[in-house]
Amino acid sequence: MLAKKPAAINQLWLIEDDDSLRSLMATSLRSAGYRVKEFDTVEDADTELSGILKDSTQTSSRPDLIITDNSTPGDMKGSEFATKYGKKGTGLPIILCSAEELAIAKVKEHHAIKTMLKPISLPVFINTVNDAATEVASPKTARTIG
Image (cartoon, rainbow, N blue to C red; front, top):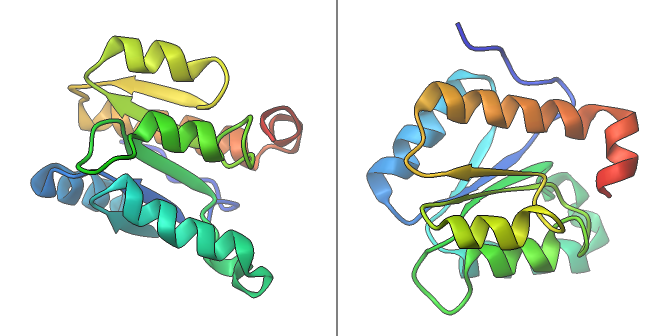
């Protein structure tokens, strides 16, 4: 049985262009207790997040954790999103998923709190998300990743 999410995590964003994979991932996350907002491109998430960060009245819409695929359609890749918003950017916790080991290696150290190499089994996926959510919810870790 998979562990449930930490109570401090209210909203999770999932960016994945493969409709069937995104649906499966989102269903699994919801079953684990997460509230999930889905995007099929990094650019769509970037547009929404930029607006949220500019408008201080939208703090409840700000995601607590973001999971992004590296390769989605459009000009912006998940690794660029992680660079812009991750640990060295605005401090948002991001998990980068990719079938490309090089993309993961470049982002892991400075921008993403976790990375996952595809293909990913659902139990490993949920456990990795739960681990990241626990780190984000922990006051000690929150100081080090922000």
